[in-house]
Image 1 (cartoon, rainbow, N blue to C red):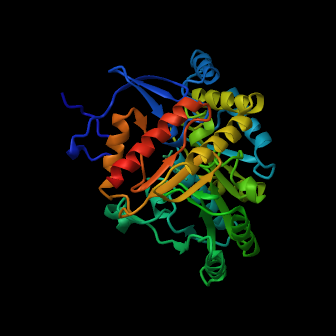
Image 2: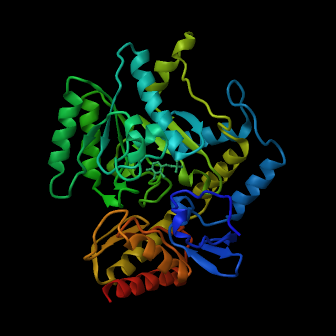
Amino acid sequence: MSSPIWHPFTQHGFGEPIPRVSHAEGAALYTEDGRRIVDAISSWWVTTHGHCHPRIMAAIAEQAGRLDQIIFAGWTHEPAETLARGLTEMMPPALAHVFFSDSGSTSVEVALKMALGYWRNRGEPRHRILVMAASYHGDTIGAMSVGARGVFNQAYAPLLFDVGTIPFPAADNAQRTFDALEAACGGPERPAAFIVEPLILGAGGMLIYDPATLAEMHAICSRHDVLFIADEVMTGWGRTGTLLACSQAAIVPDILCLSKGLTGGAVPLAVTLATPTIYAAHFSTDREKQFFHSSSYTANPIACAAANANLAIWREEPVRERIDRLGARQAERLSRLSGIANPRRLGTIAAFEIEDVAPGYLSALGPQLLAFFRDRNLLLRPLGNTVYVMPPYCIDEADLDAIYAGIAEALEAVRA
Ligand SMILES: *Cc1c(COP(=O)(O)O)cnc(C)c1O
């Protein structure tokens, strides 16, 4: 029986089996046919504290019995107020204003529109956006425009807007990146903003660069009065070892995007945080200067309640210790793998390339590995020949061992 569902990033022409998941707990997914799958990628980087965390589930149930949805233009509600206050207490104090949306991609669209609105309302319109090579910021047209061009967006290329691309800071040549950024910031067409994934480029292949480089890029933008947008959709909520990746570089962006782990990964929600300067440029008695953005479910109360439970978990549970422990366990297991290239780790994320294999997302290896891992009850989804492990923070030793045993077996199979 074929399903009417059209799945994301799936070539249905291959007829690959699509497992049906009936329930989940912690780092485990359970299928209808009775299998227990270890979620080694946090269900695409969203699940932080584990699936069906009791506090988050209870908060959702409680809120669902009270207020489901309310227009957010000109109206407000307790879960959103509590969340906005909680976020401003938890995040760097300069990020004093909270704009809600529904996904990482929309939080990026909002950030870009805030940056353009800021310059326009100041009477100094600027439209050019600077980006880093190999970046990923989402799949809507604006988010694709500021992301790397490639097979993912070839069909839509004519619609994507032009950006200035700064090279990825190679470990041995960050100066090239600084020089390019300096030149682009000081160029004749003054850029509105530079958008970056701090410390690690996720979908681009788990490419890591150091905090000093991030700090220097921020300093260059500050010197040239170019807004700095940090897309922490993946890196936020502890993934890189700290609540925000930016804090490792001791920088505060002008605009910050958060989503994935905002609700602990339970329900969709996103926020774009901005400094008083960005907000003030829109604050006026002139309606033309207001921020022209909304979506039907902006600050949905049930999603906000889930996020409030996430914030409570961060405040009251030893989340940072769990993150440190997972990081150490990842490092130890990664060090025992052989036949891999470029092993690297940042916080809870471990990644490497499989040696002697043609790189690229469409390399035949990717789908083969996916099936190989699926057959071994592991949810792993390599990016071409880049394999990464990014589990929920609650994963135990046995499940982590199962992931690395599956990887070691895959490496054997590739070599054979
Ligand atoms: C996942 C991701 C996005 C897009 O988030 P969605 O919720 O999938 O729209 C944007 N930026 C980064 C860095 C991401 O990893």
